[in-house]
Length: 257
Image 1 (tube, rainbow, N blue to C red):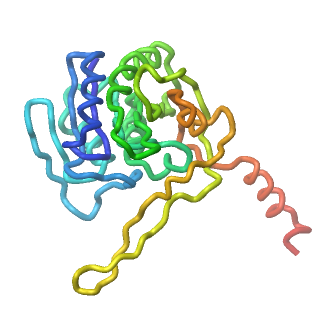
Image 2: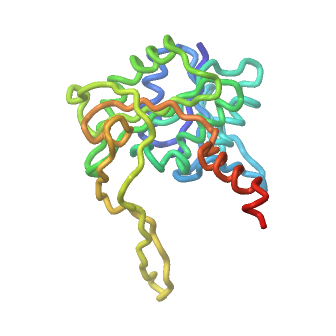
Image 3: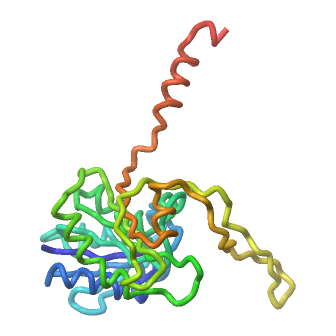
């Protein structure tokens, strides 16, 4: 099995080391094509206005000066053009990718790019709820086994599997749970205003760290309570109830008078 590893934290990220360890437990044909620099929050962006350059570090390790989607595109279409991968693994992200995160996550975007090219793809992330030292040993201990089970079970070709590991040691993980995408009841993202040495204003995005109170069965609740969350995601974003309601209203002559 040929595995392509990518991420959004960049070619030198610690989480990529964990991902390669996981992949090496599954195959001896492991390749890395990752962004040259961190691309967190890049979502599904593609580099359309600038040229892309590929840097080779060794026979199976490359970086691309672009987004996670760029890296997967170059990996599948150019670097592995003669024999495309059988599986794409993205991560292990330094921080959870759950709830609303899934629409901005470069980690998940890399997996969606692989899925759109016909390659089964899995995104893996490690929760950092208290921002202390990351428990990289947790995905390293559990990751390969989970991927094997997922491959044995299979999933639809238009689905990406989103795996999130809880912020705790490997032996403190309580269970593995198949979840739905959650929703935070508290806005965590904020912009902090600062001054540079010349008096100019600049801003840093940050997170408040305030935990939400998600419902049972969601990705958020699972990682809060020490479980590994597995969520099947897809790109069909149409809200069917709203579509039906709008269609009735807009197509009703009485409503349009």
